[in-house]
Image (cartoon, one colour):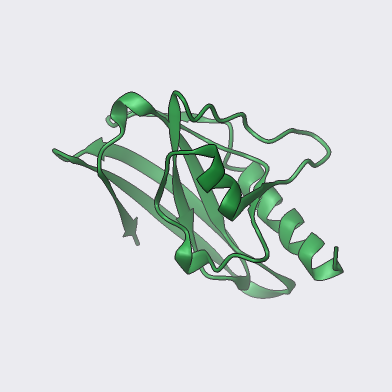
Length: 148
C-alpha cells in the first residue's frame, strides 16, 4: 500500500475516532457513530449513497481500519443500516458533527455541522461520518442537511 493511502486511512480513522462510539438521540431518533472505517481508494466519494442497507454494498465503498486502540464498530445489516456523510477530499483537518435525526413522514432528515481547520496538512483525507441506525427507523429517503 502506498504511503499516501496509509496516511488517508489513518487520517480518516483519527477523525472518526473522536466522534465514534456515542449514542445519539436527544429529541430525535437514536443512532451510534461507527468508528475505524475509511473510504476505499478506488471509490469516488460523490458516488457513495447516503443510505446503505447491506454488507455487500457497504464493503463496495468502505474498508476497515484496524488501528491501535480499537476495532471497527460492528454493524449487523440484518438489524441495522448506515447513513453515510462523505465530504470531498481535503488537506484541511475536518470534523463532521452529526446532530438530530428525525422522521419527516416517509423520509429521515439528518442535520449535521462541519468544522474545518484553517491550516493545511501535508496529507489529504476524505472526511466521513457513518451512522448506524436500527432498521425499524429505515425510510425510503434520507435527507442530509448541513447546518452552518
